Length: 118
Image 1 (tube, rainbow, N blue to C red):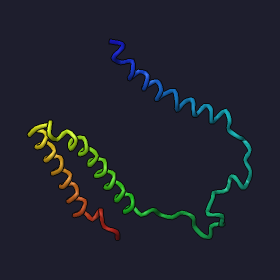
Image 2: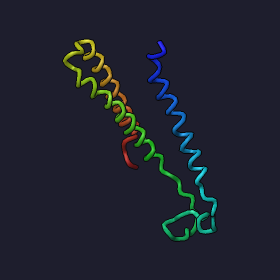
Image 3: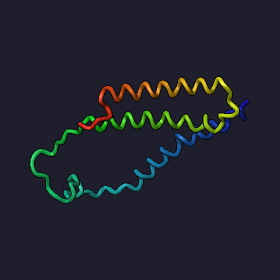
């Protein structure tokens, strides 16, 4: 039984050890030399004039969320297409339902105006 979980345990251990080791190595070789120039924010080499706080349009964020949602969902179509011949009718019906849910989500996003630039 332990052999079955050995691979998972190794991946889990590597997932913890590698980031911690990278953090410790970066702390070990970190330079502590800071100057006034290094502490200044970088603004394309120019001093900012006026208020530097710029509000980010939420439309960009919403558009990116919709893209990521549909992009991730369409990734699930690839394994289904590869094994389409072997899966049978049940898998075809399930994928039809999955695509229908995607179409409803796309329709809702379009209806709410999440895909339009204002």
